[in-house]
Amino acid sequence: MNRRELLKQMAIGAAGLSISPQLMATNSRFSFRDFSKTDFGADFKWGVATAAYQIEGAWNTDGKGESVWDRFTHKKGKIHNNENGDIACDFYHRYNDDIDLLKQINLNVFRFSISWSRIIPQGRGSVNQKGIDFYHRVIDACLERGIEPWITLYHWDLPQALEDKGGWANRDIIAHFSEYVYIVAKEYGTKVKHWMVFNEPMAFTGLGYLAGLHAPGKKNIGLFKKAVHHTVVCQAEGGRILREIVPDGEIGTTFSLSAIHPKTQQKKHVEAARRMDAMFNRLFIEPCLGLGYPSDAFPYLRTLDKIMLPGDEEKMKFDFDFHGVQNYFRIVSQFSLFPPMMWANQVKPKKLVNDKSELTDMGWEVYPEGIYEVIAKVAAYKGVKKIIVTENGAAFPDVVIDGQVHDHQRIDFFNKYLNQVLRAKKEGMPVEGYFVWSLMDNFEWAEGFKPRFGLIHVDYNTQKRTIKDSGYWFRDL
Ligand code: GCO
Image (cartoon, rainbow, N blue to C red; front, side):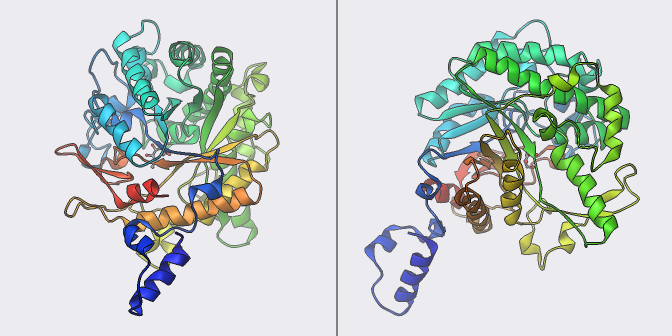
């Protein structure tokens, strides 16, 4: 029953006339939607996304090595309330029950990431069999329930031992990352047929090496540029290794993308928006498509050429089977003297909305058209075969009342964003999947546990899980 029919039925009810038995059967808390799964096609993938550091906990259990996020969160003043992922959602021990909950909400793709330092504690060299065994248990728990495991190889948690040697800013990372990818692909490639190399390279290079807000907390444009280039080479190299080891696999990688609009049509703002678009949207997707770095819109990026070695141009390319789009908010750009080099920054989202209800708990603008715009942007590239929305979701201040979480704002968010995904699909764009960020509330990086993105509420004091109304909404979709 779609939204229009439901409203009509409720109007009938309000008029004192009889309400259809079907409506009585449909729990109206979960019924508002403008579409059903069939509108997206039988092959459309519906899933959830998570990340190792944000849910697993067990930060030093069973031989796991320290990651840059363990180190960073153990420093005072880096994370909201000095929180950390030492325990998080304790997924390391509760994975079986959590995948049961995923089964209950009828989403049959589980996207998760592998903690590199759980597999290879020092980032290179000896392998930790207990770490290997853990992910076999997770994969098997999915397969036993008819859920497809989709693996992200790297979701920001670099082994600290490699960071101690320069991390992504040291070109040796290409060899170490290749070794890691090879080991993981060999180990799980017979069971797992959907792979992503990176999660949001712009985020972990930009926030980790330039802004200093994420691990490893560096603020150095020279290190940032090296990290960008080595990541671009690893992005393609990871794809090549996966395709060689898992020839029947679907190999992709993910990008954080936002619709970027100039504050006004004044030339200075339009050019500022083009520089931000080059930096935040084009920097990683275009090299793998053979387009090189987007220095046309942002000439400063030409300095990346100095870091390249002969043959790198070719090494940066890889024809991924799918490209993952991750969208949360729009960016309205304006010319600004800060930050230098980019000479552009973002108009504060709260200045863009009429009232606070149009902002999520992250202070991000709810802007559904933005996901249509970024899907269209990626679909326009020659060489893009398939697009999966590998993350989309929203944080709202959820509370449990009598064992329920009435997160209607989140349901409204999903309804609006999915309408825009369906719009793109109906216009013929190759969007073939949608994964919710996230299965459950989890550690939201520098913001700690305050923002709640889950379809399932987590009480961090008791680890009790509670499916939210939005989880039931997806169940009934
Ligand atoms: C990202 C990361 C997730 C975040 C989510 C909400 O896209 O930033 O993949 O780890 O938690 O996006 O910020």
